Each structure stands twice: as structure tokens, then as C-alpha cells.
Image (cartoon, rainbow, N blue to C red; front, top):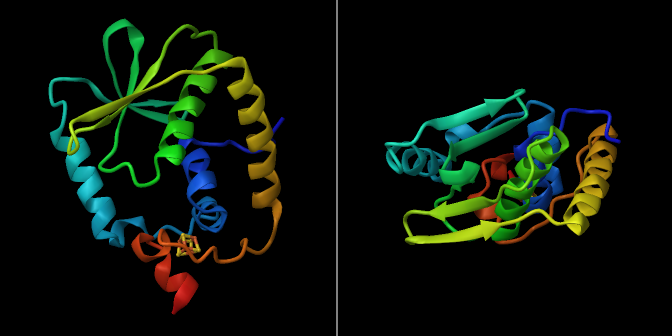
Length: 165
Ligand code: SF4
């Protein structure tokens, strides 16, 4: 098992960029400077106003809101890195599953696109998530960050200046 506290954001960044994961986990935080992140927060704050928002569990997972039948909801502004979003929600389901909360699903809401995606947790997902947790552990034990990945994600990344300038 992983020796560190892996948050939902770590799981998401693992799929976005492992270098970004490393920076974030080492407390090098530049997110506030990104206009895109600000827009994401605004969408988050102004969507689904009637629901109870931001349910923080153990400072590890931060669920946007909980809907009918215990479904957990995550709000995203775009589907540009949807695999990362899906695994973030799978990790929430996994974290709850390990604490006895089972038989619930997740939904990723894209209010700007008027779309939603249902996320489930399978036995195979559990095995995969545990392997990813080991990998995250190994990445964060390195004293230096993983290399620059140089993809279209970089131009929108809050760490762009750290990687390219
Ligand atoms: S700029 Fe690119 S390589 Fe650097 S942290 Fe962001 S996504 Fe990763």
C-alpha cells in the first residue's frame, strides 16, 4: 500500500501529467494564477446552487456535491482531460468503498456542455487504482520531478512558466 496520503487531485494529476503531480505534491502551487482554473472555480460555485457543496473527507477527497441515492457528483468545465476526471471520481468511489460505503456511483457534470458521464467502480478498477497509488508513491519519492511531457496540455497548465521559461 502507498505510504503517503493520496488525494483526489493527486489521482487526477497522475493522468494529466506526472510532473504536475510532483510539483503539486511538493507544495509548489501556482493554480491561483491560471485563468482557466479561476473559470473552473466560478462554474463550480455557480452551478447546482441548491446542493450542499464541497464535502471534504479526511482532507483527502473533496466531493463537489452528493445527489439522490448517495451519488457523488464532480463538476468540470470541459472534457479536455476526461480520463483524468473519470479516475478522480473512481478514486473517490474507491476511497469510500474502502471505508464501507459501497454500491454508489459517481457522475461527472459538465454544465457548460449540458452533459454528464456516469462513473462506476469495478473490481478491475480497484486493482488498477491500487497499482496507480503505488506508482504515485514512487514518483513522489524522487527528489527531482519527472520530465516535461510537451503536449497540448502544457499551454493551459499553471506550471507552464516553471517548465518552459
Ligand atoms: S507545463 Fe506541461 S510538463 Fe509542465 S507540469 Fe504542466 S503539463 Fe506537465
